[in-house]
Image 1 (tube, rainbow, N blue to C red):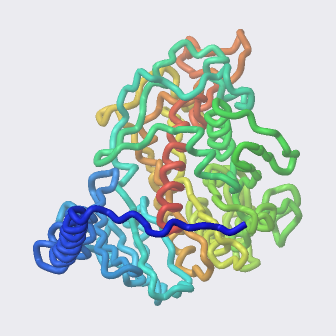
Image 2 (cartoon, rainbow, N blue to C red):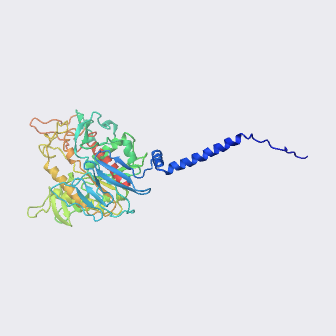
Image 3 (cartoon, one colour):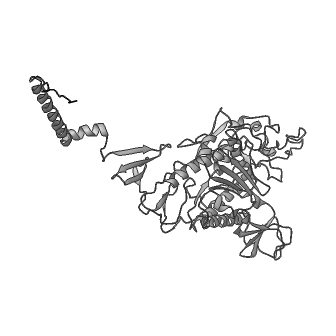
Length: 508
């Protein structure tokens, strides 16, 4: 069968061809006009409006404390030059060099040479809100810029009444020590829970347990020291408990709590003095008396350093207890112990404390396996008025923070604080590793909180003495540790803000 095709194809009317030609010409004209607009000055303005690609634009980023601004200038597609601007002077602080600025003394610490500020033991001259990172002097990327954002001074401020109250109650936390359970022990007043610390030039964020768990995802936080370290750790656990119940994996040697949602681990290791201690006989010091080797760290926690990301140290109060001081393998002093006046003491308890702090800090910042953040919480003030803890001192009846006129300054507390600062600064001079160190200076703010201690409410015993006797003697009481809930929870608000600031700078 033969296929047949039409003899001819139908044609379009001739009138359509001029229209097609016109449309094609118009299209070519529009394409040409668009190209012309893009490559002419007016085209630059139009493209900038739509695409916002002006490379000369500077972007200002204001910090949350309204004191320090970071200006960011884009140099090219791969390099960003960052500067810190002091909003009070509008002057830039160079961040490209390997230096940090001590905002408290206007002194620059050169990170390349590890030259630190000289220590004046009579003055507290350090900016206690600044991360100390003296080395190593070179980063893997020597061209990278460092951003230093120390924020405002968290420890300059005042206590303000906050009706929102505490973040937890004594009944909602099963791990707090009974001696700090003031409400459970019958303390009649509760307003001491309703004060928050307000820094002068910024806000101290209220502690958010979920945010803290996320901030510390996969990390280990360690509290090492005395019973005041335990006080702070239990406060933190009580706060976090409101968001998630941790798993207790600890033992007698080390308390250990694990939060499954973010794999955060919180541990506590007991170390009364933070230095090596023995009760064995040494030279003319008999067996049974605690002997402190002031130039040797306590090995009970040094072995754990490689696993710790944030370390909070607490010490000082045990230096009031009976002990012998050994330095360079020689007995150089003692507290509440000395054989006779024929031997001369070379140091007292406050100087021993200074040496111990220097020893611990130098041991931390020279340990090649430690890369974490060390937070040294300053000496926690007690409020024994009219005597010491064992000589009739009392804080009975204190129900509100002290005013400036009511503040009773302790010369011993001031000396211990200054010795601690001095030892801290001596120790970090020797830094060789990649760790960081912060001095969390709570001493002055908490000198106002004479109302925050358990006082006579140390136990649930219904027959305990809570008032002075007829001859004026105060009842047995605790004016050193802190009620929970209470002012001690603020330490962990400080801690969270310190960690947040450090992680932002360190990660950048």
